Amino acid sequence: MASDMSEIFDTTTIITIAIAVFILLRLRSVLGTRNDNERPPFEPYEIDRKTRKAKPAGKRANTTDKASDNVIPMPGREEAQRAASSTISTAEKAINAYAKSGTKLNRGLKEILGQDASFNPDSFVDGAKMAYEMIVTSFSDGDRNTLKNLLSREVYEGFSAAISDRESRKEQVRSNFVGIEKAVIKSAGVIDNDAQVTVEFVSQIISSTHDAAGEVIDGDPEQVGEVHDIWTFAKDVRSNDPNWKLVATESDS
Image (cartoon, rainbow, N blue to C red):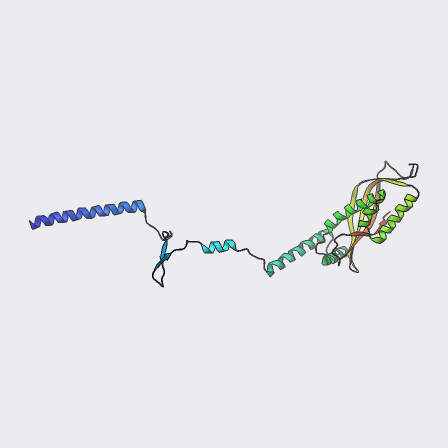
């Protein structure tokens, strides 16, 4: 009898163990296992190591990423110096491209750059061309207000006197500015705190002068004429005024 009960018990035990193993394997296949790279499940409470009491757990946050997101990198002194050097280098390259390095014109342009970091020969020529057209047109029209803003006091007085002389004879200039064929810097430099740039212009203009009766007394109202001028522009490098003014004119006949 004891032998029969032992056999039954052993058989029952084996069956129970087999069922338990089967259930465990099924649970593992359904739930899976956590590897070392996975985060542990979030716990709403954690144990304070000092008091050994439970306390609310804070949110798990990647503080390193959050801190980096809120950091705005500021340029240091070295970065600022490199930026300044880069700007100067770019300006010098523009001058070297305009006038061969080592020439008198190149040195003169760099003298101006040394006093005015914004100076660029190509940009200057563009501005000079616009000023040239405005001055020529304003002189023909007798527009003293526009001329006053573009000319030095001495040059303005000369232009104004010529306009007054023309008006006294009741003469009228009729002109049509066709365009500028050439505008190049001939010389440059800083003299007594004045940056000076001399530009040679070759332009095409239709111009004629008429008397009080409307008769043509000079020029040709239908003929395009080529005009050669050499103008010098200047500005005080100590002044905050960025504008250049015409300080001298001559014709290149």
